[in-house]
Amino acid sequence: MSKGQTRRASSLVLATGAIGLCLAHVPAAAEEQWATYSNPRYGATADYPRQTFHTADGRAELTIYGTNNIDGEAPDVYLSKHVSLADVSYKKVGSDFYAVSGTRGATIYYERCNFPNLDVLVCFYMCYPAAEKAMWDPIVTRIGESLRFALTGVQ
Image (cartoon, rainbow, N blue to C red; front, side, top):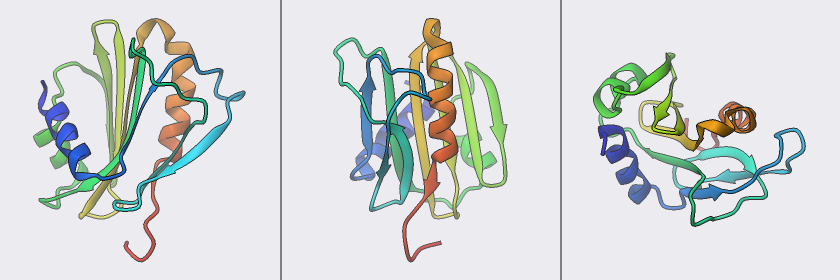
């Protein structure tokens, strides 16, 4: 298990209300009906395809979560300390986010974490078959564009 996977797994335990969905067949992003998930404890909020399925084959996985940024790390520091970059083929780091993507076997993964402040991270992780990249990429893009911190009273 990579250090990024270890950190996310512990985050899911900490982040009550995290959403984890396995997606079976999802129509093109433009045709799909979308819903909004919001984690009331950490403010992690994102849109996702409304028609989701939990499948035994695990063809695709989506996790939307929030967690404490215990050490108050900036995105570049957090990324270098907590995420394995061994198989990363895409990496972008800004002042308030990081995004990484790569391929593990026949699976593409994408993770984005926004840092609305130095106390909390709001993130999503998605993996899907590389053979279905054309179908999933617009969905990943839309989820990423919708990822936000929506916890009233805290900024």
